[in-house]
Length: 355
Image (cartoon, rainbow, N blue to C red; front, side, top):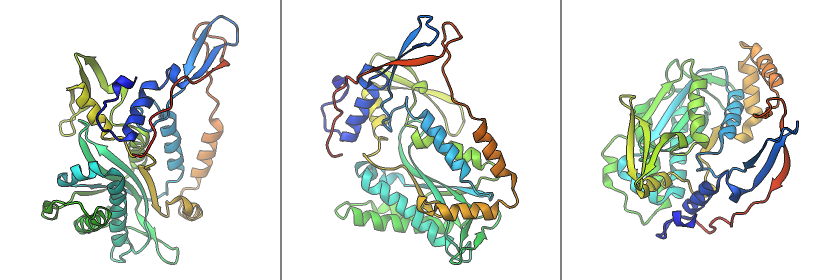
């Protein structure tokens, strides 16, 4: 396993990710022995997942749970999907200073949006924002940007809901230069010795905003894939031969599926540049969607769902209809596979230390 980890300098977060991925669902992680309770003789070894945030085999259940929780928090109002993108001139600096500048990206985007959201010309109230960091293109190149899902309205200082105008949250043309100015100010404060390229002031920073119309749950499901998903999944890899890895991806313009062969080390480089620093949270909540504002959010749901009285009953019926999932014996088709023994973990400790 250690042969897979290059000897050149590498952040410990990358080493931990490689260690975890190679050990995931193997004897190294330990597990348990399950067998049929009808004594047909069938048994299986089930090894534990590594739970590393960059593992392509883990987190399917976590994604489902996250999505279910967020769907229950939705307000019966229109939503907007926004994207804040950093220019290409900054990508190398951001990649070399991920922990500091990812945090700046969150702070700058939220500050810029709040500035316009509080303006009475547009909304005049505090917004609620769900934010998800995304760092890759379809070809797995480095492309840091931030997705936001925002209810179309805000709470004014008296706690009164102020709806946004139809198909309009805040002006993007005004939002872009505000975002640029705040990001650069915070970035220079975080990295005072860094030489930021002057070209970033000569171009418009891409800020995208579009109403979700009646597809809010679809956009939320789209964002859910980024919450626990990594840059590439096992299903995307179609070949590993001659020291090359070939994966498939969908062209963002033509929507056609293509394949890309890469030398193994280049494939690892592209994958590892999307591994987040240890302890960094790629999903954050702001305004009345912040976890400390749960009471405010519940009050909003009650006030705004008067026109949708059946929503609570539907949720209760959905929860009541869920049953525990059991595994039927694939051999006799009658018995249930039950745990009969625990398998100890055999792996050594993953790489430790600062990132």
